[in-house]
Image (cartoon, rainbow, N blue to C red; front, side, top):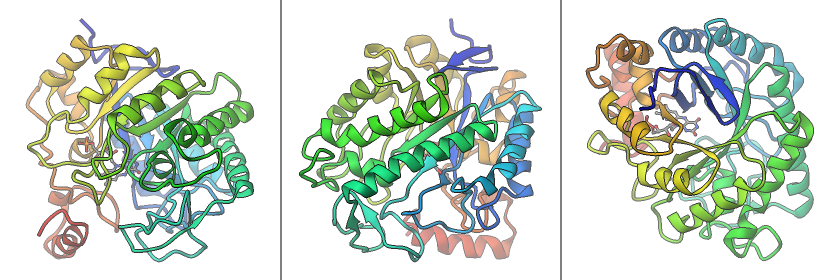
Amino acid sequence: MTNPFENCRIGNIEVKNRFIRSATHESMAQDGHVSENIINMYKDLSEGGTGLIITGYLSFATSDSHSPSTMRISDDEFIPGLASLTKAAHDLGTKVVAQINHSGSQLFSKPKNRVLAPSDIVDPVNGIKPEPFSKEEIDSFIKEFGKASLRAKKAGFDGVQIHGAHSYLLSKFLSPKYNTRNDEYGGNIDSNTKIIVEIIKEIKKQCGNDFPVWIKLNGSDFEENGITEKDFYRVCEIISKNGIDAIEVSSGVPTGKFGPSRTIKHKAYNLDFAKNIASNLKTDTIVVGGLREIDLIENILKDSEIKGVSLSRALVREPGLIKRWEQGKREPARCVACNGCYNPKGTKCFFTLNDEEKKFQKKVMKLMGFTK
Ligand SMILES: Cc1cc2nc3c(=O)[nH]c(=O)nc-3n(C[C@H](O)[C@H](O)[C@H](O)COP(=O)(O)O)c2cc1C
């Protein structure tokens, strides 16, 4: 019986338990810098028993458009703030992995730069027709990915996670719908994966072979001509042979049949994708999505080769959830999966907002397609 509350090693990192906070964009950075509110959020999660926190995505690339409330790792000036974040978690025994992302064309506010993507396919989120990356731009993007990871190492992160899910740039490189390139970076799933293999190698080159490199991937995009389970399996097979240390399994894209954060009736909705790779490949597997019951989590860890579970919204509502479960108070998470925590003014549970804030947030939820 795998005890989820015991020490373990996941993706080359020693963790005090098997509970991971999945990347959750905080929307609370100050012009890209770590803020006091973010540090407090990480302290609450650490005190609340979370074994490892994956940061909300960090922006790093010159070819990306940064929103001021997104944490950045694009320059050494951001290292001291990020170091105080890792220290806050480490002091409380919690590990931290930096999720590194390029948004590509999936921008939720007006772009400040040229918008680059694998190909010039219009983005359904905003109607933007991006320009395809040139070979030279891909080369410098890969180098920048390595540099950002080295900054993460210097800031004390225990590893990095490549964001390869949810229709951001690398997810679009994998998708036949968005990658129509006919050079070495497109044309079939193996070529679509090439950029990710090169990024893994560059990170290991700049940070050392032992530095943990994780990735988050979609088991399926659930959209026409998007990534299928077969594609996903092939990507996992390729990166498993090329140094990836852990794969976190998600699914969905904002404009697909399902998004990444589904409603309350969907439980453990990425489990089958995760089980398949966990039992067939050697790489450590983590599953995210609709995990709100401790009995279910214990069964997943008992009945499969999955190494860790990750939660996002349940920990926004209850940062102390893991400690509560460990203390034997085993009621399900209180999160009702309303998605009201997708709040541009700072990620927090909808039920903690005052009436005025709720009114504003209801409009946001409608705009984002969560409510009618
Ligand atoms: C407010 C919010 C922000 C999120 N930000 C990110 C992010 O930065 N990177 C990412 O990979 N996923 C992000 N997600 C998706 C979650 O990590 C997770 O995959 C999804 O919500 C399903 O897990 P859950 O059912 O435990 O919430 C975010 C989710 C929420 C609710």
